[in-house]
Length: 131
Image (tube, rainbow, N blue to C red):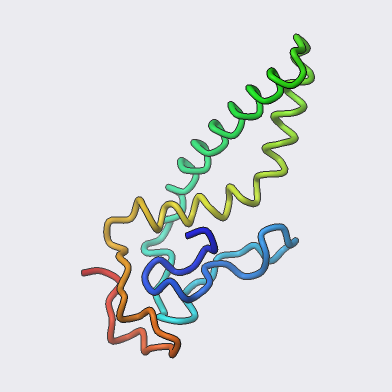
């Protein structure tokens, strides 16, 4: 999950490019190894917004507590700048890992299939993405 691999075969990359590359942080339509379609139904990744929101709230809370412990300041501008700046820096990670968490943990139809975890790519048409 940490490397954003396919939740079904754990071999193919879910995203093109690196996390912080400009213009290339797009999700693949299908797994290059097992041909699983990542967007299970139209608008499927709208649910990733809720996961991303929860991640942003948790990160903002951690940044607030860290700023309070390190600076002991009462300035709201310091907290606002630190939290907004930190969330802006973490936004590519949130975009990527909200979709990964959605597919790995919150999708009941997506399961790991160990028979697909091989070095040679398999024909994706003989396997269904659900059981």
